[in-house]
Length: 302
Image (cartoon, rainbow, N blue to C red):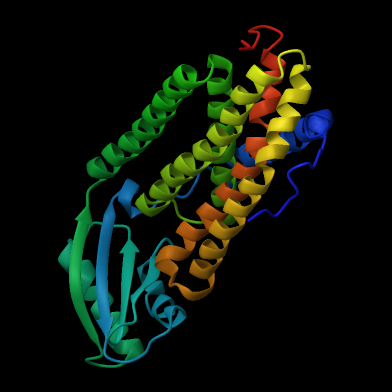
């Protein structure tokens, strides 16, 4: 199946300076969220707190639960968990001086008062200490950094070092955009979003590898053709595959946004932003960067 004709010839790299401007604006906007909005809002997984799973014996809306639990603080997070039998919610909140059991009882009492006596059942109670949360933060940073390092090594051995750098800059660009999105929207960053970011890394590097693989093939058969034309031809030849893959993946992500509960909605938002900008960066960031680096580290042909 081809969305775009194989003989199409769009001058992507000829318009790369427009892409540079757009990329710079997006990166600046993402980083501007730090002084304006503060750092990304971390979830209980990283800051420590109490996680309570509650089940109701009748249908209850998320807003009802959130309104009932307002006295417990503004940083409280309510997510619908299951609709299989009755209604289940996951409630995440900061742990104050009182014990976790007392906090759990406060949740039950408030819900019984606002929604109905005996309508609430506490299914589980988990406590994440501040030290555990800090360890998880460090582990998340190390997991992302190690993934990028190994991907650079892989790309350098399979293709060239400059292509590896281009791919890594692509990934950093995409993760930066996702960070900015979550910082500006005030959405919570937790282990689910970390999983989404690692998924984005895997998805985007696969997209970039397809383009780099075609560039490598064309470098052998188009030895006397200017490098910019080789890159343009390679991007055009893989364009149909790139857009089809992204489009069908986005359909699945949109389904999550429309039909799933709040537990997976933020995950889906992260994937959507990552896929859209990952597709953009595989075309307008990776190849242009390799082209610029060719002045310092010439791309080997043949």
